[in-house]
Image (cartoon, rainbow, N blue to C red; front, side, top):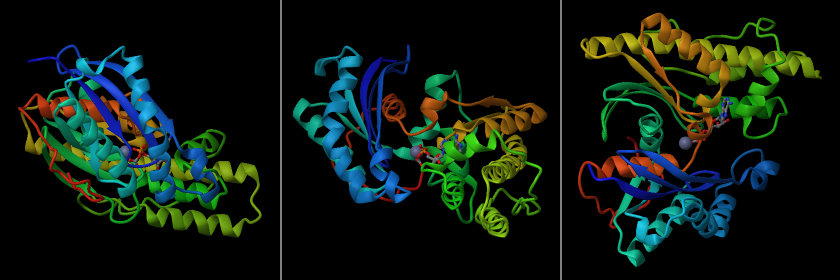
Length: 342
Ligand code: KG4
Ligand code: ZN
């Protein structure tokens, strides 16, 4: 296969990112620049779409130049441009995808419109030796789902959350406990000093068949506990965070065991592999529980490095390379989309 060098652009939420990746043979992340907007949104306790879009406009050109500089690349070295075309906050997606279109047109390079979720789904193939099929657990701020990944562009959803996404539950829990946005890292940090056994929190839906999950009830139970104890001291916040995190880890691990059984039914002759992706995959305790579930099932567990679990542009460039490796692509006519199921 021809080795390609692709510029990736990611602007679908609150990180402005650009990266240069080469592959599919001799796969290399040559640069990976991420500029977080967290500070611009901090006062609002969450991402404000209009502020996000404007912040992307302000820095994207610089981020792209920096990605090329770090990779020691000229435009001549770039074979294609890959950018997130959805799903996400539409203002931000428009900024990144239209910038990519303009570059592709001016430089006469092919444009790949990348689905952000596909970026997360394929990241593990950039960082590890990994063949299809595999089972993917995608857990981010907007998504919580089990996917059967049969090939590039060949996905089947096996189960999903019926209410909040896992990352969303972390963010809401943090907010109600007075912790800063984004909630995941804040909750994990407090949980590290907490006693998970102090509060009995529910494991929603665990007795139900299938792979669907629910996290809204967990958050409500936590709010009820917190209300009872008001004003809550720091140790109580730590204990509540630990209880919450351990409930989420339990639910995800139990669902993973069942998902691996389903995978084995579908592909009896294939080795079982679970890949975890999305921002919540950065959580140490969740990783540990998933690893244990995999070990018990005799499955391989693959988790990309933390920096590639949360939003980044290397995963977008890589998804572009995977698409281009299957044949020529020209997505100049594609619109940016707020919703785009895999
Ligand atoms: O994939 P991502 O960077 O953005 C998208 O949603 O696409 O995921 C962000 C989500 C946020 O909800 C954040 O709170 C959560 O991932 N997150 C974590 C951790 N780091 C980020 N959740 C739990 N533990 C963490 N260490
Ligand atoms: Zn994401």
